[in-house]
Image 1: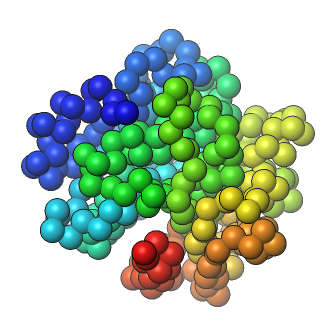
Image 2: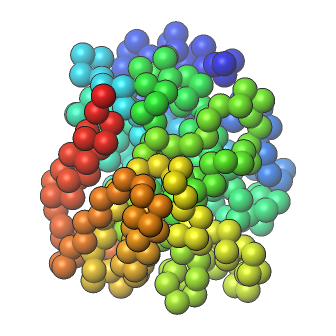
Length: 300
């Protein structure tokens, strides 16, 4: 079933092949507290365009040329330590690169954990990734996407949000009377946070998501390596071994869990480089390996 407000965007914008931003929720936003919309974009010349204070989550739709569109859709979750979103370098620029390959991309501005806007601030990011999957799947025909080729991609903390959706898809944390499948068809995780265990996680991100003294059941629920099963979607992992922000062991333990469950997976570890791949590896290097894996994973 299509979301009613999408008719407007379809008739006005779809044919123009523009990049348009649509609200994630048509009505009430689940788990939200009454608040003003304080979302802001900040320029940061050393790293990125930074987005903060997201309280009304949205998807920005990047449509490829219709003549090249191949039916693949990827929902991109920018990183930022669950404190901010790097919406250019880990959002719009990635989406445009996918468009060149005929892939439809969606940049998700998800709610960041904040007790001022969320009742359960740990649940907001997962809800928004689930709703993004539902929205894309419900409107797949209008966006030229195959319902069986919709995946998630995440960077750093965005990788945690994406991998959480990849292992907890069997329960809907958003309204879903249509019973739309919330399972991603694939996951692409770039220097991801996977675990909330203190010996492995990025503590700043964990504190932002779960608080400084999280309950053991919260740590367990959001340690995604513990929830991999045979139905976890095929996953591509890439990380630099010298990452001093998010330990490379996050990717390794997830890879091992996927192998144990016989889930199709591919991992690339780079001896050189740092968190965010600011110097190494080059974008062409890791992204080329990613898209090669994706084309083989989704081939008919």
